[in-house]
Amino acid sequence: MTHRFNTTLKAAMLAALCSTTFALPAMSETLKFVSWQKDEKGYGDWWGEVIKAFEAKHPDTKIEWTKVERNAYADTMTTLFAGGQPPHIVHLASFEFQSFADNGMLENLDPWIEKAGINMEGWAGQEKCEWNDETACIMMLYYGFVMGYNEEILSKEGLSVPTNWEEFLDVVRKTTKDLNGDGIPDQFGTGHETRGGGGQYLTEMLNYILDAGGRWTNDEGKVTIDTPEMIEGLTRWKTIISENLTPRDMTAGDVRKLFADGKIALKLEGPWLYPIMEQGAAFENLKLTKPPFSPPNGGTSNVLAMPVDISDEQKELVWDFIATAMSPEFQTKYATIANSTPPMAGADVSGAENEVPHFNLLLETQKAAAEANVDRIPTGLEINFNEFAKMVMEEAQRMIINDLEPAEVAKTMQEKAEAIQQQ
Image (cartoon, rainbow, N blue to C red; front, top):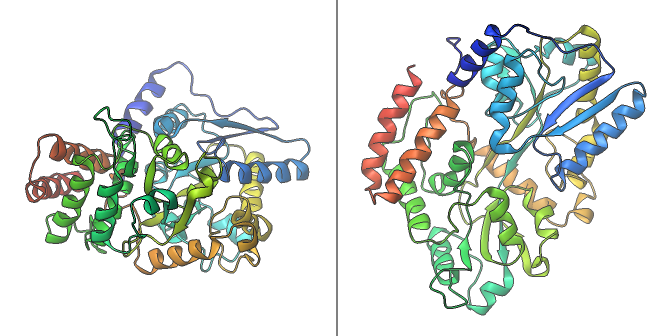
């Protein structure tokens, strides 16, 4: 693969090289760990337990755990790496590590895995962490989507839980309502983030594209957007947004809270939805089931990695942190604390359904997504993903604002995606 800097990374590198200093992380007994999941119910709790166990094992070492908001995360990490001050423990979304790995900034983990004798066979999504014939990271989650529904809202309308696209559209249309008579919907049929970055926007769209049989690229990495299946998927997305069946201009967190508080009838989401539901005002009326779409949305989520430019002593500590997170003990706890399917093959999840009643549903949708090779990162566009995602989001928004034909938009996306791929 041709090595190149992405635009953001190149600019940040240039700024760093022009500065008077280029400091490497100072030797210390503090390891820096930056994450967007720090305050998340479930995942944040699990990370907290990993940190506690690591610090107990290494009493002279502390983890400095800092939260950075998801919408600023990629830029923050790029700046830290470019300035020669990356966090010691590198936590990235699965679509973000490629640029760092491609520019030689991430440690090859193969020798560490081999030395530790860890069996990676069957580790869910781990093949996505292979970059330039090296293991650049450890996949921390491969998931399948579920669908949350508000039983009370459906019951009031005499509706059943939908099992296909036609039923889904009927339900979301009938449950989108202006309840206070001001002419503005305050109850929605479904909910999608439309305010965040391109990566999340594409994830939301994928629910409809996959069920229509569309893919951004094929298995060989060829762009496949100008197809009847993709046109149908874009048509479905346009319908949901243009008919205001979802709230507009909201972050993922805002939309999830609306569902948890009883303002949305149906919510397509990953396994992290349940802990949010538990904190909502409408929790007693909320249930989880299989999505009405096939295959379900899903794929890789986030990874752990290690920077190259830290001391050997720090690398030993960082690897032990990663190994702690990968241990059978914490892979089992991933099911019960993080409410998610652990990536380790054969992790002991017996009894997980006692603490997470829907755990078998999570396993079922994860398996279905994996069998269909679903992932939000298109093959052949890994390095260019951020640019590609931004382009798709902009063209999709233009389709809705200017009421463009999805077939016309698919042609434009195809041309622009091919140009991005050839850069």
